[in-house]
Length: 502
Ligand code: NAD
Image (cartoon, rainbow, N blue to C red; front, side, top):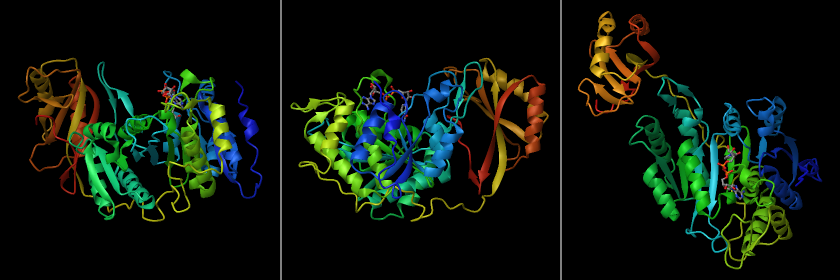
């Protein structure tokens, strides 16, 4: 099937009024759903001047491991508005996810994913679902900092920052305030990750307290996800770190009837990107089967963002009227008298209803709602506090050593440690569990040992030179040091977790 995407990139009739936007047709089903979406936007009179960039599989396979060329970055930084179809990240070969690269490079810190049920026209077990997931978009495990450290152990760093937490939590509360939402729920795993997820929780409480008109509650992510899957009507706005948000939003979108139904906005201080939440669905690509609704609703969010509320509402209402007429793509569970159509015919059906309003769904108006823009104008996203008083009180040294008795390892460490008067060995852990002193024979050990050295004098500090001297002594003793982590206090508060069992 030939989609001729370029033919759609004519400037809008009133070029002087048209907002330049950057468009990428993507991979897999991307071109089909982008063509359908742009046809609807054009028919609805969207005042946009799209310019096309090529990103994704074609660029990766041409040898650009980032999947995006300089000219594409130039367009994005100039138009500051990006409508993007899904792309395929080739598996293997070390290709970095372009989606993650674009979000992080352009500072698109907030990923906003509304998930709404359209019962009875789209079958779902959860007819009353109407929630928005606000997912942190730049950090967490998606920092992509991974290492192989030993034969047996691989590591992925989970980075959670105070600016990152403040920006996303503030965005979630501002979003709730501006969109008539009543409650913001934080989903987190701070019972286990007390420092990283714990920071997210405390920022949620701090910032949430500044919004007394909006309720707030918190769930540990596992039970929270279970509640979401069974009682989604409990939730209004959910704010959560990157990985949890990625998983939750696919579950939530699928619960509404199809992952193909949900659109998404990626909002930054300078640039915003709009897309469907799903991927490039290579299994149905080129078959005219794909549901264009997710990308279309992403485009509706884009129109709101660029101030074209009238066109956004016209399209959204025509789309709802199309659902009410029982017209659906094949991925959606139909009502009994529904009719399945292909991607292109679905777009025609929406176009034929432009100007209509739905009869059973509440018609959408966007005039009152504020654009999904950054909140910097309303409240500072992040104010950097004065530097804290930092004291170096020890060091964790990670060693690669074939599984051996922890007592024997402690003996191996004894002699080089004796040469250092400033530090003493406090404990050894394996995969975070204390195995020395007083470990259990039942604990499984791998070839990755964390040896914690602390100041010899309690309450004392050590210097960087002490660490360097210790590293030299360990290396001299033939031990394979793979990394170190400094142990610090910040304004007297411990800045490191205890070992499990410590
Ligand atoms: P996917 O979302 O592409 O597909 C999952 C399932 O949902 C498939 O069965 C697919 O047919 C179906 N589906 C998805 N969108 C649909 C639509 N609009 N209409 C009908 N059915 C639809 O997830 P995947 O298969 O895990 O990933 C495929 C590729 O997409 C991978 O290369 C992945 O990296 C990429 N991906 C891209 C994005 C993005 O560009 N934002 C997001 C997620 C995945």
